[in-house]
Length: 235
Image (cartoon, rainbow, N blue to C red; front, side, top):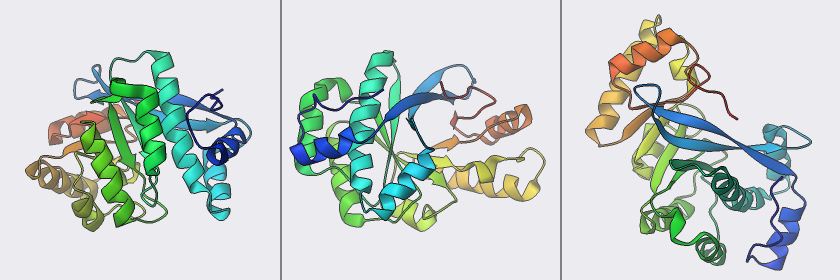
């Protein structure tokens, strides 16, 4: 269980964080050899409901900011407890970011250990805030970390939003990947996307790889990184 009482945060946000009962699991993101780990994605696991139910509950209450702060502080605590040497990938709402005082507390608490070790994945919902993205991007670049677009091809994460975000990494959603080894329309689309993103110097992650055939086809197309049950489940 992740606890927040000891963190150097404002009393109001600490009170809100105490209401959460969550753990984190991690799923590896692999390089093209299928063995070398590039990063570990932190996945929130509430104790008494699904993560979808928790997010929807907090969205209705207009409290997604609480989950944003909880994810950054909680996932990083869990990551350091695991002792992973590779990067950690953390989900972030595109509509939100930590407040300046929270970002300062984050840096104060974790220090230089986070420099160059984080990937911030912008989710595909609920909406994109250019102002929050600008602040988030500034903080990430200051610490030599990476920015990613999560679940490209679903929700708000299309080519227009991706061009605006100018990320280091784009993660292709499972819907684009499932069955790609035998579905020509997906093959053509993904091949074009890989070429497009590579031309901009962007790394491409294939998400939701569940079959050997999918993995082998995507390696042939030139995707850079891979995540999915075929390679490793969250744990």
